[in-house]
Each structure stands twice: as structure tokens, then as C-alpha cells.
Image 1: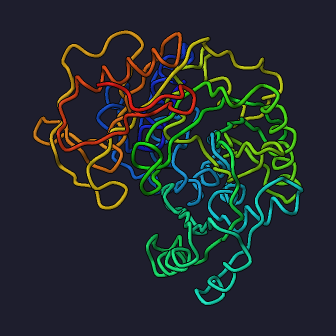
Image 2: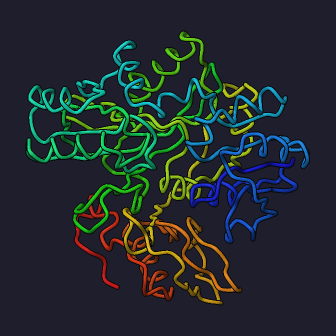
Length: 427
């Protein structure tokens, strides 16, 4: 089989890494790819949101399956275009993908289908949004309606900060994504990420993880696309997973089919584990980042049959996936300035001898300039380690980070702290 992986980040590198291990696969092409993905197969300089270009590439290479990583490509209708071209595609349609591309749509959809989530209101102008804040209790959860690379959420502890956040979002802080704002009830508890695969008719659980959204140790600083993740998450039991599938994922899949947009691909349910049980924080219409990195390192089964079944149907005939009885942790190395304007172009040196068994480094925002690996984005490298325990996995990940020479980068030193109940790792 020939498989095209669309995207250029750490999520796509991890997917391509796992896909390339399948005995069913003869070649992997990544577009636009990155220097890490280039070691797995060919890369093609076609932007993820260049729908016509991606379809032309898939035809030219004779792709048997296209695996779409980024949310922007889904919102642009890449899956719809592949479907029209007769090419199997692992990704939902743009219509089904509205559960991520519009938070206002997602919240109203959840309300229609009885999916437990936070109370909310949607606003198009600052005056009404600021007035609406008075109907909520602090802290205030204020979200940009559209896609904002995982950074479009501001949690404001005071009313004045809430008003400032409204002005920032509607004033263009997140571009077109902030044309509307959604204000939500704050939910207390631990947040986990649940993944499920869907073929339009069936849904099966496909792993879970916990990530770290804030930029700095102790869950301080601004929200980011994710500074690290780990799995398994001790807080998320098999009983809670079953409840989340029955009360959140399966009703959502039935609801989308009933509304004429059957869902094919992976759905990522961000959940808050409250005293009343799991409640939906948000849906994402693709694999999470950096959760995918830990999932791919824990997954023992060949991923390709599951991807194909989502695209073509028949997911219900497959056995549940097998997972390694090990823990995996991912630490994100980011460029200084992230999640604001990151400093790009700085040199990175990785150890020539590699990192040893059980450690993988996935590229998220890198480039080769004059033969030198350089930072080319906000989140730049994902250092992942697998071990019998989470504590051992964390120790291995930070040992690997110590071998990377990149003075202009930064990372959190407390990834996994909720599960380990400890402070920053020693480096």
C-alpha cells in the first residue's frame, strides 16, 4: 500500500512513524512533511490546505489511503475532495468537522443531542459578550469560535480580565477565528483526552492521554497547543472511558449521521472529569498534538487496518486495538516567545548516536538550512520516552533532552506531575 500523510507537525511525524512500521505499507509520502518525516519516506512540498495540490499528489503517487493530520485541512474540505476523486481518506468531511471548526456549532450540537457539557452562550459583539459575562460566575472561560491552533481559550479569574479577553478575541488576537466568542461555565476537575475511531456507523475507543496546555511549570502562563502529554492517565479508569463513550462519543456520532454528516476518522473528545462524571470540554476532528505521539508509542497493533476501516467502512469487524503495558511521556521543546511570536532560525544539534531504545524525537517545527537543523515554528521538537512506569519514562525523556543542544528553546520540567504528584524533574 502507498499512503499519503498530510501535515508537517509532530502529530503527523508520529503517525507516519507508526504507519511506516506496517507490513501492509510499501511507501509513505508526507506533504509538506518535515526533516524528521523525510527519514521515513518521500516528502512533497504541498501545503496541507492546498486541496487541489494534495488531490493531484495523491493521484500521481497512486495513494491507496490519505491520512489527514491538521484541522485546517479538514475545515478546507480535503476529505470531501478526496472522496470526489475516489481516493480513500482518513478524515471527516468539512460538515462533520464543524464539531471542531466552530465551537458555537459544537456547543449547540451537544445541547441538541443531550451530551453533557458546560453551560454556554455565544456572542458576535463585545458589548453583548461583556454583558453576558454577568450571567456566569468566575473564573470566566472565553473562547474564540474558530480554529486557533489550540490557543483560542482564555480563562479569566476576574470580571475585568474577562472583559479584556472579550476585547482581545473580538479585536483580532486570533484572527478570523475570533469573529465570535463563546463564554462557558467553568468546570472543575481533571481534564483528559479520549480518542475514538469512527467509520460513519461504528465507533470504538482508541486510547486516552492527559496533556499540559499552559506554557510553564505548575500550569502557569498562557494556553498553548500543548507542552507535553502522558499515557496512560491514572485518573481515567476503564469505567470512566465506558461512560464517556456511551454518554458523549456515541451520541455525537449518531447525531452527526442523523444531521446528514456521518463521521469518518478519529474524534478527540476533551473531557473534564467532574464529580458528576465526564463532561465534554470540546471535540476535535483529528488526532491531538502532542497526545498522538504518546498514543503511537503505546500502540502495539498495526494502525493501518484501523485507518483503512474508518475510510472504507468495516470498523466493527476489527478486534479492539492492543496497547503496550508501558507508560509513555512526551515533552515539547518550544522556541522562546511561544505561544506568542516564536524566535525562528536558531540552530539545534541532536546527538549523532541517537537516544537509545524506547526514546523517539518527533519533529514539530523544524527545517534544514545550509545543512543545519533549525527551529522553524513555535513547538519544535517532541521528546518521547516509553518505560515500564511513568516515573521511568519521564526520567528517560529528560535525560534525552539533556543531550539536545538548543539554547534558544524552552520546555516544561513537570510533565506528568498530576500522575506522579511531584514537582519539576531533575535535569
